[in-house]
Amino acid sequence: LEGEPRLGPGGSWEKLARGSNGKAPAVLAFSTLPIADDAGDPQDWLTSLDRTLDRSLAQEEALKSLPCVVGGLPVGNRLFVDGYSYSGGCFGLALECLNENASLDPLVCQGSVPFGPWLEITGVGSEPHVITEIDGQLPKEVLLPIMHGPSVPGEGHTMAGIFVDPTPVFGLPGTSKVTAGLAQAALEGRPSSLVRPLHHFTDEGYLIASPLPEALPYAPGMKLQLQCHSSQHALDELRARAEHDLARHGGRPPDAMVMISCGARGVSLHGKEGVESRVLQETWGEERVVPSIGVFAGGEMGPVGLKSYLHGYTTTCLLIRS
Image (cartoon, rainbow, N blue to C red):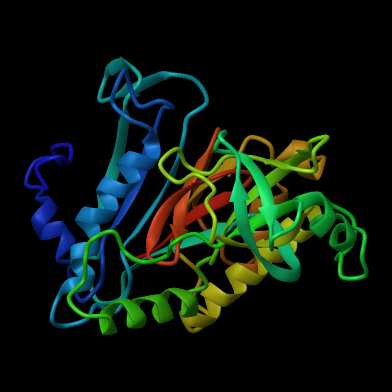
């Protein structure tokens, strides 16, 4: 806990990590890329926050919710916090539930739907984003038939969903808590993979893919599944995840929302402004306007299972109920 930034007056990471009123905490986090000179990248900070917040999962009495980190990378390298200007760095808000009815829930929409079979990376190049072999064959030979086959779900850009490690950073005593936590994450509608764009095939038939976080290069043994990304798929997924969250809370909309959306979404993806916020409002009901605030980002933070990751082309939301 000593490595975390100081909390505001009266704040304690140790107390926060224990949760309150039977609910786990949440952190709304923002960071530049890189954080600062020789200070690591944002994924390092997410790992550090996970290591702190995951302590709530190790308690003898299970909490009714899971900890989460939601946030993003501001476009630019200047931060303005508490009246001061910084060149690089990170900042955030630590939140806790002050009563039994309160909740802090992440909503992560990567804007794509999976298709085709599960595949396994069996070879990688010296560069961290070069995949040289899938299922023991050249990636081009494996992927092209799927990309042009009958399982493609309509128009869109082909991406890959990489099944990264969803288990918590903080070592939990025994496997039952991990299993229960992963089951709860699935029930909450958290994603199970990191979606990354596929750039092109080399002359040798290798695949050039968008990199994963710096500390997590592509490696043999990783599983993947192709994904189709489009405006319609993004809106369908956003609506489905919001409906799932609404059902979990007995039809009760959130009291407030913070939305962090990739700068490549918005007008760039949908052709006009306010499309995703309108989908959410329609899902919650036009008679109840949910106060919302949001930013466009150059990278989005949100959970995959019980671990926080840096996403791309994603909309992440923190849904707040008081």
